[in-house]
View 1 (cartoon, rainbow, N blue to C red):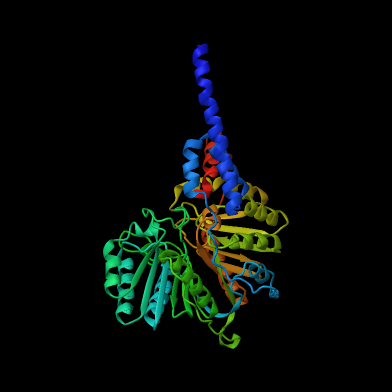
View 2 (cartoon, rainbow, N blue to C red; view 1 turned 120 degrees about the vertical axis):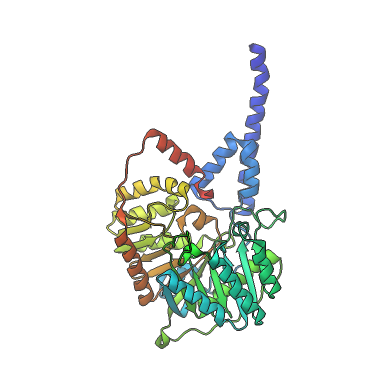
Length: 461
């Protein structure tokens, strides 16, 4: 027995040494690459590397990068930052984003209206049509999208489709062939099965953008599949939210699309000409394009939401399909509710991601105790929007979860105009009226442990 114990000691020492080396690799890599992480995420990585280094070190080397080298808008040396009259514009100016400008916006309350607006934008493109999406459906709607894009390509419009590598796995090859035969171009963002080193495969492009001639943008939460619009035979329509914008916001989205496209094709991005603002008398109102993700030096949407929570005076309205906030956002929401701000969050009682539904429970119980009201919808809702007082509204592809706020490439639009803020507030309030109040239940020991283990990896869900 003593001999067995002596022979066992070196293996323990080797395991401890390898675990220490794995943690050292984590520390040095984060410092060298400047990879900021939420405390819970950092703890999860360190514990995993220390306890299971043989498994976690390869996973960290494959998926551990959270920030890529940003292609930002560098300021001229010695230039002074512009000061705006709105705190959110000042905050986002510090992230070197395109400034607020006057644009004309239409929101799409339902799938029929959203579909009509998308067909209108595609048909109206004269020179250039750029599409970025997470999913194109293997259904009649996906076929219709490809048909209309191919038609515009045959008409001489330069059509480019940037499809996320995850979504590309389920798209039939014939869709790619039809677009290319018509003269269009298709690129796959970070293909899952590619050997080319173009970034960790867990950093997905979740942006939804359709841009015509650099001056019209269709965007929001909808992927280009039947369930996000009117449904189909055997496919129920989900509740979702989208909008179209005419003006400089569209050119800012085009600027971002060029950098996403160039990253895939390893080429120089095209120069996007500025677009004239829409006059206030022509329904122009201030808005700002908000890209978020690993290609940004900072966590732009995350920072905006936290700042907005601390500045809120009387209401925060939010709609999201998935709710797994990090500690900083959860604390900001809790403190807003504690000081009397009415915080209402609308989400589906059951989403299309059961693990996300399970992982959200701990944050929901904690926030409900602080006074946050959750409203559970009877059917799937994929809409993403936040309204804070009458100060700002945010809509786009950004979910209130760790992956969307801290890992994925996302895009939204910040609205500063009273009409746009009012429309989104009324829309969320209408959804809130359809929901049932959330009733927190004390978890048993087994569920509590399972929630903790799942939250340890929730940033990768």
